[in-house]
View (tube, rainbow, N blue to C red):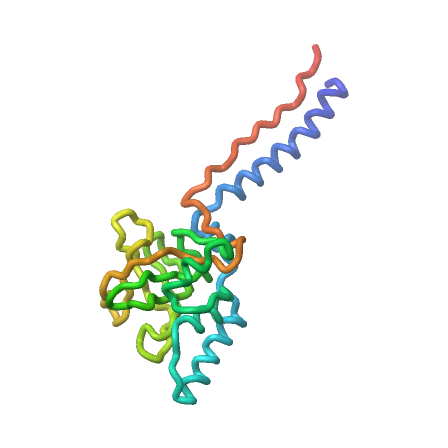
Amino acid sequence: MSVKRQWSSKIGIPFICLGLLFAAGCARAPAELQTISSAGINPDLHAMAIREVKDLQSQGRRVWCVPFARNASGVDIRGNANTWWGQAEGLYARGKQPVIGAVMAFKATRKNPMGHVAVVSEVVSPREIKVDHANWKRNKISLKMNVIDVSAANNWSEVRLESQADSFGSVYPINGFIYPDSTLHPEPAYTPAPVFAFLSAPSKP
């Protein structure tokens, strides 16, 4: 074996292994990608949000969805819930994919004129999540409440919430999700793994 061929073989094998490892990393399952792409709810913020609600309740004061969502998510927006989506433009990333820690912004309706905001606490499937929110049930917080996407386009524009055990309520229109950090973008459903080809230099006869 020539020196050049022996050198190319030694160099080629490590690069092939490196390429395979990189490809395997890029081909992770969607659920794993979701976990990596979202840091989850900040436990300190979440604990503070719950603590504040308990303090308000102990004083006989009202509990609202906006302060809870702001405290639990870190999305620093003020005002009625139905203004959050518009206020978030240019300040926070927005989208139609649920991500852990994102704020789900409800549209205003006749039944719910001030809108509503809830924090995504778990992504169960492409069409089911769990949320933490306040004042959905008057003056209370609800943790890990199931929410299902019932939109015809599968784009989370309409949802139903499990307000009562094993019973999903009315359909509510949704603006979308406000992401508290630019790194919390949902991954696509599937990311194809890149194909690598490492060839050693041809040996001379």
